[in-house]
Length: 491
Image (cartoon, rainbow, N blue to C red; front, side, top):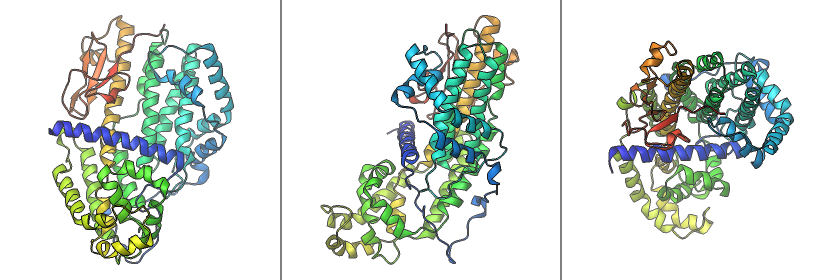
């Protein structure tokens, strides 16, 4: 397999898995982190200074996220009809729905008046801090962000059709702030993912608002100016890695709790997302509560922390460098580690090949000696999981590039309104003083690509090679290149 193709496959599979895993987190609040239960210990290894994170104290009355949690309690979730009906509001060229759907949307927005009022009030807070401190805690405010940012988008679209451009723009600007609050509020990976998704949806809604036939140019310029600076992305992600390590990786693992949690039937779906097929049953066997209880040291925390610290440092280096110069994981070395481990545990797996899980007392007695012979069984099987960090690492580059692409599309729309034609090149947007510099593709470390005749702007994507805009404008990151269309005006 070529290096280019392997990168695409890894990136796409991780991207899918992270979204599925996030869905499970949002719906069920399941504990997915390795060491969600923590305890104090005198012999805990010292935390590396470069990965240390000190949570900042915030008074409850100053914390915007308390208002989000209140909004979660007041929220009326949309049914399938409403979810489908409002989706046109973030599709730049979609036609408006039927009068019946419009009536249903209005009713749903009225039902969420109190929840929307609380989200609006949160924008006046200067600080925010996530309330959960352990992975298994329910966080209803997470799914509230998605529902209510979409409700605000639907409200903005209604206001635009009434010609209330300033009010519509203010709602979308507020959404950008809401998503930044989610991303910057001592965020962990799940918060970054949720906030990033809300922001992407808002970006597409901004392009739809810009696409209305009568949108004033001053409104377009206002929306262009509202897009956050790119520096916030890398600085936030570097801090996020410290949050992940200090809060979610560093505490001591309660191995008994860990084994019991992963032996439950509801954990199986998450395991299937976290591990490739050949490692799923080994994970469940090696973390079986009965076997774990009989091993003198089933988990070497110091060794695991050293491995995790190296991983976090690598991704921090990645995100602060150019995509084409990033420090990639040695895929061959990872595969060798996995293969050697499968070979070492083969005797154990053969002994329990036909046994149901969790293991019975009879099966535990049969497998005990083979299990104890394995050094650090939990720590080593954890090395075999799919790395979700690789997805979030590329997500940062996607977010930065997407924001540049949205800038470019908005600027091209403004140019077309002013000149009655699209620019010949993206350089014209700078010469016309619409943008201060040429929009940048962070995967290529070069300007974004542009076609006047196709009305397309694109990034080379994760393979860092230009495929002449091969991709879908409906889902920009689904193709080899990531492609955005400069929409034609909605009539």
